[in-house]
Image (cartoon, rainbow, N blue to C red):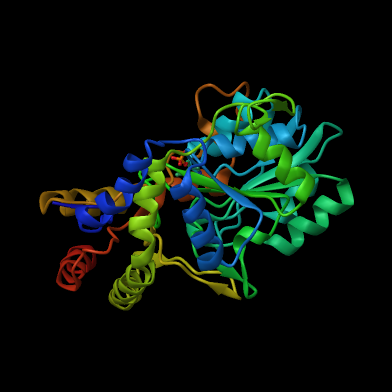
Length: 357
Ligand SMILES: *Cc1c(COP(=O)(O)O)cnc(C)c1O
């Protein structure tokens, strides 16, 4: 069976050797030695500062909204994973959807201004498949209207934009280290906050509002990552260059094999983007075509994933429905093909042959 992804795991001894350090110390969480070491190594690997690791990639979205005092409307994208929208609603804010650009699949800045009301306080947008949003335009609009910008960078491990980590753009950027993501800690995530004061606020929020047992700095929740999570991350991190290189080779093979296919289009990345090869999306001409291809692939036990699906403006628990024609249309026609370290070139050939036939 070939699934859309397969979690990369190093030899178990490597994980055990690292975990043993926590065992010997009898220290399992609360920003232990392994977590601090992983943060240090990640800051070097990604060339970023002002971040901390969290227990998943969803709580930092909620913490970010809370830390920025967002209580009203948040302009957001319908083309993302459900966590982007549910975090807004969970924080008792209202999502105001703005449709995406046809090519980049990221929020359309030209439509943002029309959606701004007196209640708009922030923009929460997703860098889709590691493709950056139109960061420059969003920054200009945000400045003009005094809005905060949060980016959901769950797909963005290792992505650079204009020679800088993509995690360095925006007021707050979140990412996910879930085991289906490019780099993982089993469950996990991180939040990047360039501003020192805001960083502290987010940091306290993720640790019950305190710093040490006595000093309280307001309301908090628990979004701390454990030593088990850190041990997974420390055992996976040394392989990241190798993982990305292999995924790049497979991606180029996919792209070369599928680029002549008139029934689908490949995804184009924004200029000045250093890709991370985290996903292999293709967009079919019609949903019927997509369904027939998925059926053929399933017959060979190959299971891509319809992702993202559905368009988030169609979620059943929203107070009102606003149509987002481009996002809804793309959701009906897009699929992410299998892409992972242990996938073999000959399996990519098989997948492409089925799609092309
Ligand atoms: C995976 C993902 C999340 C959620 O991350 P978790 O670590 O699973 O909580 C949020 N947004 C996007 C775009 C994602 O892909």
